Figure (cartoon, rainbow, N blue to C red):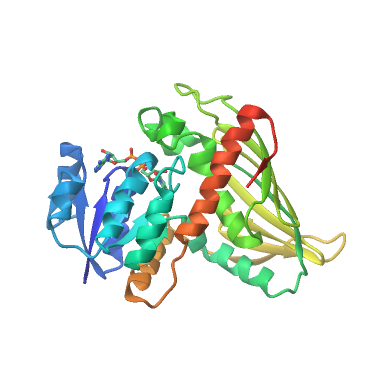
Length: 328
Ligand SMILES: NC(=O)c1ccc[n+]([C@@H]2O[C@H](COP(=O)([O-])OP(=O)(O)OC[C@H]3O[C@@H](n4cnc5c(N)ncnc54)[C@H](O)[C@@H]3O)[C@@H](O)[C@H]2O)c1
């Protein structure tokens, strides 16, 4: 059994506690500054121990850690863990600026630490299958990637006005909080964004002034992309379509399925539809991280890949301010 420290026991931290336990490969301990929350999670999940600070936790023994604090804390915390050669899974986004990233890269390489960033869409079996189909070459070269999606954020996260979401400096707003998942998935599938222009605004969500509606036009080398997302429409939907020279593939996150089409004037054909519970992707991510620690799998999302997506987040925010195309 590996001992895993979850740092931050908020919404996603509690999920990681539960999902690492579900792997049956770990003993989980918690570091959380909020006393009541720390006690509730320690009791609910029968944790052996918990800590009020990272300083206290670092005096104890564990094998790996999951950083689930707001995004401005990810890099400094990861630096301390990696310097102790601890395997580290960092929640998305990697950070809210470039501060400390090159030191973290140097330390990760110097200590040969296992590091992964928790872009959990990479665990989705429909997206994995779609990526494999594209790589087979059957549809020819990808030329266009199009995303449309939205969901009612207050319905899923009623406390959105009281958390990191309220400010860009803590990882908030649609670009850093939600669109980053899709951008990372798109880069995984058709390659890194090489330039972009973005438009975004706060349109609907009460009690915050960060953007809740965003449009981004991208280039991924020769592939043209467009992404539109909002965090207030009633129905949850998430469609990522890749159009190739000889056909197209589509991921529908809200229906856990992927589709293809190649007949001119034809219809979409459902390739596979999965039944997934909300925790399933996170259990899969936990197992992938444990496999990486065992040396039997590569990082599901490397520091370099998440750094590329961080550059996309920052470029999109800058483009919204200036109205200009940004080179990545
Ligand atoms: N992958 C996903 O689907 C997903 C979903 C939600 C959030 N996230 C990401 O996870 C991170 C946390 O989000 P959240 O929704 O859980 O936020 P949250 O506000 O619910 O929880 C953060 C917790 O960190 C604790 N904390 C803050 N500073 C700390 C410190 N120095 N030491 C220990 N604990 C500390 C806070 O007390 C709080 O309980 C963010 O980066 C967010 O973008 C990812």
